[in-house]
Image (cartoon, rainbow, N blue to C red; front, side):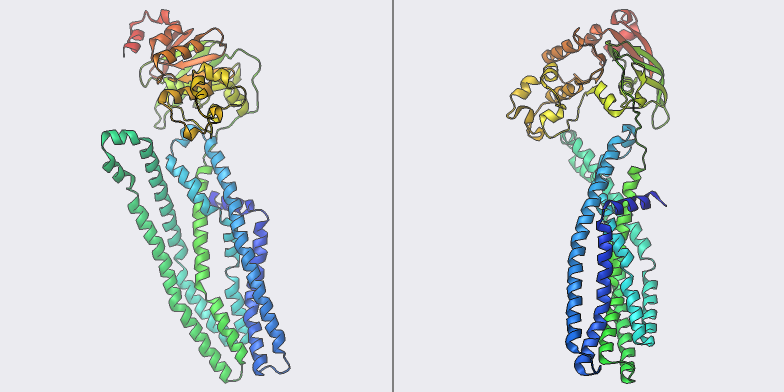
Length: 555
């Protein structure tokens, strides 16, 4: 069984009790649909006297009852389809969203953001229709088979005629599923590529406007439209071809049933009511629209499951169950190596020990591996070999809550998440200390709703955004990692933040990636990174004697 098929079964199960309800309703509805022509035929025979002794009133009451059953089952089916789909879509979206956020950032970065959004929004909506589609697929052949049995019971020649027509329909539909599957899969892939390019362009909107390359960017973003159009046209061509074949074969099949039934009626082998029932069974059994619709839904559902399963198949980051013992926040990197996607060695057997409570500033030329070292230190990225320990505990063995409570990250361009300003910095306890330390408290106090102000309504500069991100990072209990997190601050604000980070009151271990000599001067230790290796570790005043070290800051 493929991952897409396993996901389809899980999605059917997530619809809960609606799946068996829909199955029961579908079977009851089909049974009523198959009973109606025979009952109506009996009513006609009773009315014209072809069935002596039969009461037309009783048969008409039965017809009314069957129609009521069809109306009721149709209403329950429509409501249940919506309810089951909503439950399945919600469950699958939660599963996929949780999985995406649990991925290693390196793996998640291999997929364009727009493609992930397309799968989460569009393809999950298709996959979420699995339960009603499976029920429909399981019952779609009951009307043709029931009609075949009924026609054979009325007259074996009618059954034979109907079998020939169904075989012809099967031949005409044999390539529909394969062609439709390929077209739908190609369409969804082109949709994801288009969404990915659009998200990238929106993120770089200011650059595009400044460079005056809007026309060129529009052409680049819309490049997948040609493939989208081709796959869309192919989808509708396949559907139109199937509908056209049905439009030709269905009337011919019904005409054949009329001819054979007419001959049987003339020969006295059939009553007028049975002929009426035969015509209805022929129309019911040869209705290609329901079969094509069911196949088309099944194709879209499976394609959606395949797209979702493609992401769910990616391995997530594994955590342990341990908590941190009491400790000063000592950080140790042992023989840590990291390779890029191309196999190039980005960090080469790094050994680094940072005593608890130390302010360590990481410096080095561009591309030396400073940010990667900071990412490894707090487990934003796992090394390909080696181990990172915090107070003697490997980071991979820590429970998620323990890791996130102990380690905080501040970035050059932080992404603020949450509905309000308070949620953006993770207000769980008193937000004032961290907001004052990040020099953002006065800004928040001026907002109309203070911490409850909707984040989307706050106009802020790059420095204010950076300070909000810094305030969130400062909630860390044991290890604080700042990757150029003060680069957008003015001189006065940076001084206030730096004084907080370097003051004696902060006993956390602090790792600061910086290119400013002033920060290195105030550090307890400086890690000089060059070419993916730690070239030296020591106080700034000691390293300053090396001309190559001084050249880092001149650059």
